[in-house]
Length: 603
Image 1: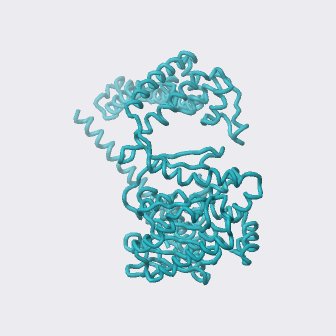
Image 2: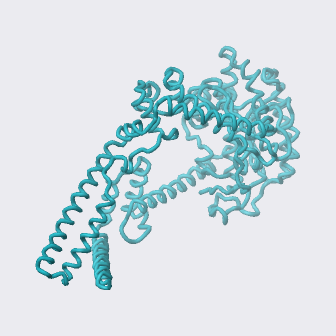
Image 3: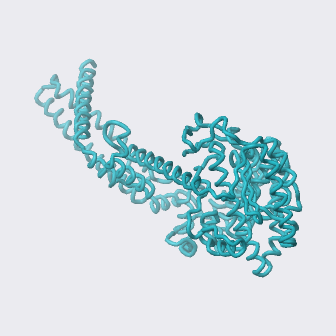
């Protein structure tokens, strides 16, 4: 026993020496690799398109001396991608700063950012004057919408949560007067929390208006139903929510340019402001120039989006000047887009009747429904869950019986899906078996020679006996049967797309219609493709029943209770253009932590 222990200790020491030597060789090799070699080595690795772009940024920046190594030792893929992301982030910050400088330097003289409460009476007088002029010069122009005047407005918010965020400023465009105003009252100094330290950040002590005074001044106009408001690119519902959070209700909300665009065309690749102005900018600019005698320059200058200037965070940590200029441009573009949509719809059949009679009311109705929420019959849902689960269990049993999913089915599926992997595994097991038998024969020969020569006392004999025992023990662990392969499928899983694909395309031999709907794709099991098969293939009835019950359970019965808000009601956000078919869609509200500005902004 002691001799065996000693032998094992010697083996462990030898193994430790080999590991140390191998590590030393690896370190030496790493130290001998040049940076050029390292980038070449990583460059031939498998990288996604995005990773390839980041890799190139890192490589170019490193050899231009713009960035150094982030760690010691052998360079790896993770370090290079981190370098590239840092370069990308720095470049984004520089680009953002450049855009902000450009916006500030080109501030129009008719853009007014108010920072003193004493300016509020003048402002509201200009709003009254705008309404008066419209009722005189544009009499009955907006009668179709049931209002006497229209202005473009927009609230900047502390975030995008419709129930938790508050407004931090209000922008408005007065079209007849050709004046834009931004009223800031909720900007905050977050330089320490968000690492904002540039000259574009809001600093404690910077001037802005008093929230209560602004709301007191603008509320009578905002709450007037006879004076219409248009909001920009889907923000009507957001602004209606935000006003409720601030303590009052917007009335006269008659247009949202996103809804208008959906009504005019349902098949655009993107409905963002930038793509729309790029696509229709010449038409909008021509219309604006004919009406107001001046160009917006939509075909000549870059139109900056919110993200272009402020990233993905809140505008609250930025100073009032840059947010104000952006905000006024936003309502000006919103107004130009609204007017073009309004006048175009009036000339194209009954689109304007449809919008004025239905769509113009939807924003207010949607927000009312969302904030009211729905009472849910929990007991009824519980009964439905029991009923549907029982039917689902029966449907699953019927499926296994209908398709005869047994051991033979699983074997054929395994060999179809993972046949090559199983064969490779079996060959490796056979090779290992042969190798072990060779080793056993070798050491048994040594044992036999030692016995024949009566040399059983030698270390050679003891070692050979141990090796024979070791290899015979290993031999007992070898499995060659295909059912023992790691890739052998032992059960049919309804949630496994490869299993479903085998059932449809291999077992049932259903014609693959995937290329008709998805170019370059085949053997799809996506929901939309399966819906086609369910309608056309009677053989898939067992699978269709399971799909129906699972959808009822997982999409509605079990999911709805998890979406209850603190008031015990179910709240959902409605979107009139939320689907490619033009139908209404809804998404359950997911309240976020009460940390209104917890998304980092970079300048």
